[in-house]
Each structure stands twice: as C-alpha cells, then as structure tokens.
Length: 263
Ligand SMILES: [Zn+2]
Ligand SMILES: [Zn+2]
Image (tube, rainbow, N blue to C red; front, side):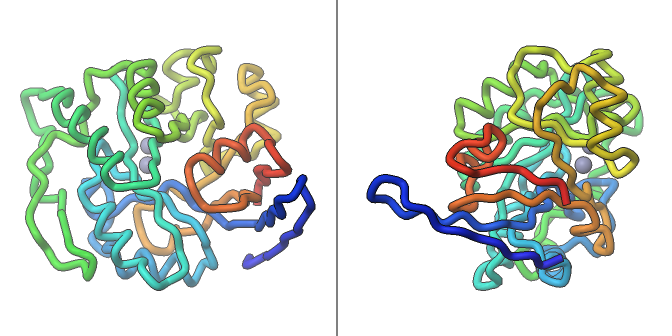
C-alpha cells in the first residue's frame, strides 16, 4: 500500500525518473447495469484515494459515457484517470480498452455503439444505465444495449484500439464464458496483446501454470470493481516515467527499466 520507489539514471544526456504507480485499471461506474448506484465519480475518486491508487481506468461495458465525469472529478486529486471501456466482442470475450484522452475513447464508443447487437427480450437495462456528471448528479439514462456483445471480433476491436492509440488487454482471462481462454481455449498468438488480466480468483503463478498459452506475457490484476469497497482491492504496480498508455505499453515490454509488478 502506498509504496513509492523511484530512481534516476543517466541515459545519455537525459535524466529519466521512474516511479512506482499503483494502478487499478478496471473500474465500472453506475453506467454498467451490473454496477452499484454508489459508483459515482466523486466516490470512485475518493475510494481510489483511500486505496492510495495513482492511476485508474474507467471501463464500463461497451460505453465510456461516464469516463469524462470521473476524469473531471479527479482533477486536483493527483489521480490519473484513463478513460475507456470493456468491449464485449462477438465471441463474447471481455476486452479492457484504455486511452489517454476522452476523444479517443469516444471514437471507439462510436464504433461500438453502431455494432451493438440488439436481441429481442429483456436485454435492455435502460433504467439501470445512469449517465451522471462529475458530482454524480443524474443526467440521463443510456438507452444503448451495452450489456450485449458487439458484432466486432477480437481482431477488429484490437485493430481499432491500436489505431486510436489505445491499449487493449483481455479482461479476466480465467473467467468462465467472458474470459478469452474459456471462449477460445487458449490465448491466441495474434493479436499480440501487451498484457493479460486475471480475475481475483487466481494468482499470476497459478495462471501461468494452468494456462500455458499465457507464456511470458505480463499478467496484470485489477479490481473490476462494481462497488466502492472493491476499488483498489486488486492492483498492479507499474514503474513508469509518466502515467500514460504509451508508458504502460513500454512497461509491458520492459523498455528503459519500466516494468510491471504484481502487487
Ligand atoms: Zn468483464
Ligand atoms: Zn469489468
């Protein structure tokens, strides 16, 4: 908790300072039908502060409509918020997609909204999908079928996220039905994911042992919080120069001393 560690090193004429950032990159808001109504921007930021997080990702199902409000709520808090969403591919796999800016996330959202599959029956949870402002005040309901898969396959989501400058990490790879291993039976060689997320139910060592196709890819852990108490309950420490998507990718590749450490 709250560990800070940094060093400087001479790199030619550049002095680079890496710092250990406590990250929970997978947090839902009350926009997700499965997210508790307490998951409003100021309380998420407060919970992140209490958990001594430096970096959080906001990832509602197939939507980033509350991410901007969390970013705004975090202004002045010292916590960096990466906006994004948890896209559900046509295969049914959950994919954590994160960006530096809201514009990038919204560009993905536009594609995702057009590709949401509409099914007959009770699959629309409009009145459980709250769009709120930075203080948590109700703005409107989201009337998109965000709890359903998109018509985009994994490769397609990956390509779009990379083209937009984001990072895509398969969510909770060990989970039944929405984890990539249960769906595809293994981690495919392509696309070349920067990292893989495991659920609370396993450890990095167990995951590598149980799923050989994980290979040497970095494994990260996040809370996948749907309620406040969960925020920061699982986290990953990233040694970075700055808190941004490119630095996360460099840490996953171990570039320039950057690295990923399981908390
Ligand atoms: Zn998920
Ligand atoms: Zn999730």
